[in-house]
Image (spheres, rainbow, N blue to C red):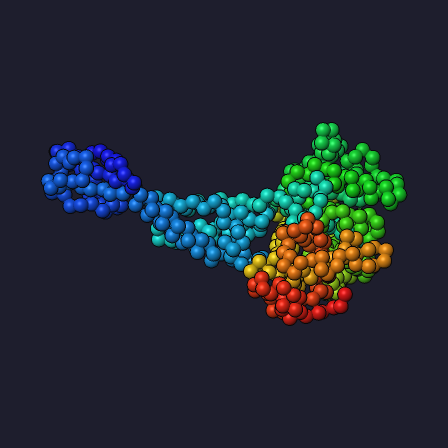
Length: 545
């Protein structure tokens, strides 16, 4: 049998058979059942190149076009079926389905073989429920009646900061920067930082540790890298971090200087250089072991580095609470969310009883007073102290122990909270083109409201809009057209957004400022509403400027 093409605007095909061909009628029958419509045939005698004669033959018209159209249609239906099935899986952190979250990538369907393949791209490789996602995705897609085989691949989003701005080169490929702080020495802050970092690495994340204590660096004692000296990439003029068990490490103690004897401004410069000129590469989490206190060094770190979140370490004593409270207030002023409190050296067990040698309540008091959502208790364990001196983190030395399990819970908390923060920050301020209004939902707030773009632009408080000496406004009301629309809105840390306007101006708009200007109660729906300020809707003034 042969298939012959007949020229014309649309492809037409005829089957040609030879007498005594038993294959021909069976093939036609198979084709007829599966894909095509045939004219009735009387015998498998030879046909000519053209429309069939009265002797009868099978006619195949526009076969391949019909097949392609049917295939495209069936694939589209199959994709809808698969996405509908996957939308049953809800991300517990974001409260929405994985399709709406944009996790489903590279969906391919072969309906002939009944095969479906796709990739789930999660926010972090350390996602604590990635196995559940993979299992559920296999189950719901395999339950479709036409699916015979499912191939799910798990991946994570590329490492990138959640915040806009001109970041130093070394920080441009770091997704989350987590500060571990206590603002008081001797409470086990470095122990928590190191073990947290190695816990995150054990969960599948790419992790680095930065020891920010120049006066008394702890990292060289707590880990044992083969190369204990930092090196310099002369071409890029970047510091190459050392490595231990897959975690990148930078400390002043690895700079060959031991402990620093210098004044505060010099220390701030050293920390800035070590942190921002290091070639960290792609990291999912950079854990910063903050030095004690709330002075110049701490403020410099918080202002130079776009911190995603902070973990607070304390001990049960009241004195520890007093100092820790200062640190929480510092992070609050700098708009860095504190996501967890770790109360170290809480208790020990002996003779079947639990003892609290340093009292109780400091950690709970921090949680209650400042509304920090999560608290974890670390017991007094000789092995935990010994691991800090031996150069082998406890979670690596005893990954199945009680301490490791507590750090696993802390790690899960950090992963989940950082993902929530990134999601909140990325969607805090957006432009709704259909309403022609800026939609604002400040992180950690249930309030959502609309702002007119022109009013936001007129309320810029930078030196380009307001004279710094006299306070006189340089940007006049008429300078901003009523129909102005932002070209881009990107987050700036946890406290503001950067708005790019058509004239090229980049406006930094803090959340506090956005909350204080006039709001739209009735959003504009067409360009006719842009003629005057009154026609944009009823304006509600919350705070006078």
